Amino acid sequence: MNRAQLLRKVVLGFLGLFFSASLWAHGGAAGTDTDQCKFELEPDHWIHYTAYQPKAFPAEDFCGNIPSTDTLTQLVFDYQDVRYRNMAVEFEVTKEPEGTRVFFQEAKKHKSGTVVLALPSGVPEVGKYLIHITLVPDQGDRLDAHMSFMAGKGQQVSSGNMLLYAFFAFAGLYVLYLSHAGFKRLIDGMIGKIKNV
Image 1 (cartoon, rainbow, N blue to C red):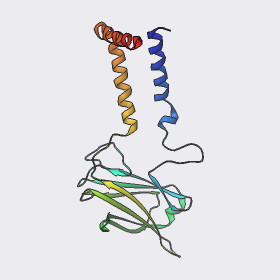
Image 2: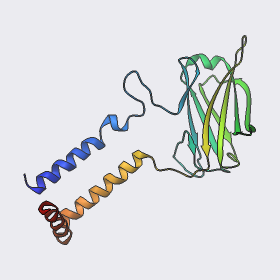
Image 3: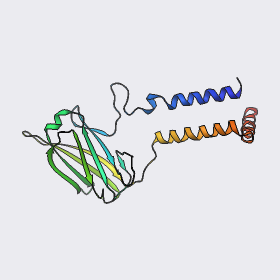
Image 4: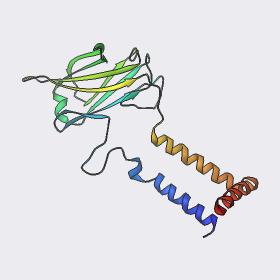
């Protein structure tokens, strides 16, 4: 097998991995779920959470790490269970460990199943925050659920983005290898030295 055939097979294998559905899956295998942006309000009853900072990071969504402070932050909750649309739900955001209230919305029903909390100035400082969600039923006890997030640590590059960057870098080098005789000689010389070792 010559180098060109080997290189083609490596590129095709990499492309197969890159476009593999399991590599880009949001959840997990059947019977499991690794979605870190949802949490359980009651046993087997879930709510999905996504955070946005449209002025600082347009078209980006976040979950456990929100990159900036002091900028418009929207916390969006989607009920994954229709039953919550008929229940009053209260929302609060506190700075931890102090427990200082940053945001509060009184209990009300959200018939659409989606709740958007807009914090016009976001959160005031870097650190850990806790989202308190309280179900306020017409009868019975209140039920609290909590989810934490970190704010102000800057935008991190996800492993998916790193893989995408690596793919484009590899593709660019491959195109350069095929189109530039000097670069091809350099790479071929390096491969020849490696073979001789």
